[in-house]
Structures are given as C-alpha cells and as structure tokens.
Image 1 (cartoon, helix red, strand yellow):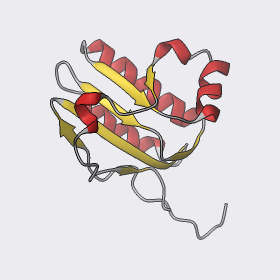
Image 2: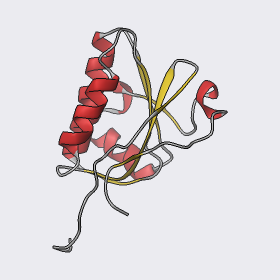
Image 3: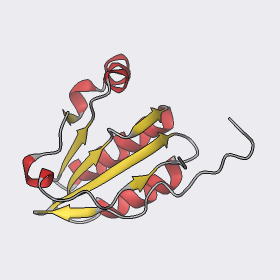
Length: 130
C-alpha cells in the first residue's frame, strides 16, 4: 500500500426505508477501518428490534478485522431481537465465509430486500478512500 494512501471514515450516512436501515459499505473493511465502522454500526444496532441491511456489493476487500465487525454487529442485533441481512454478489466473500464456517451465521442475499430496493440509493458508507 502506498504511504500516501489515506482512508476516509468508514461511514458517512445511512438511510432508512420502511423501518429497515440500509448501510452501503464501500472499499476495504480491514484493520484500519474496523474501529470507526464498529462504532457506527454499534450505534445503528443499539435500539430495540434493529433491522439492518449491510450492502457489501461495493466492498473490494475484507480481512479478519472486517469479519469481526460483521460478527459483532450480528451479535448485537440478535441480542436485541433484531435482524441483520448482508447483501453481496461476491463469490470471493462467500468463499471466505465458507472457509471460516460463517456461511450459516448470516442471512445473505444477492439483492437488496424488496422493502429497501425501491428507495433511491443516495447515502453510503465508505470503508476507504477510492
């Protein structure tokens, strides 16, 4: 990685559609972006019955710290009797989940859920600078 490479905060905003909070993650989910992303997702999952959708389709890289963030938010959502869904069409990410035996842990789809799909995608969370 280039020494001049700078990373942005892994979130800017999120959007809510029909009671579902949709967060589009972009770039890299790694040890550098995990702390701020964890803080933002913890806040979004803090209420009763959180319904979160994490759109991972624009994510270009995820390491064990990124997987840790996903597991943490899943556990927080589940503890509050909520729902977490991941959206990805990355065969590489699905392979990582298989190898780490996390495939059955997450609710995974290749498209946004119907209740969130009709809302314009205006807000996103950037995991790293483009």
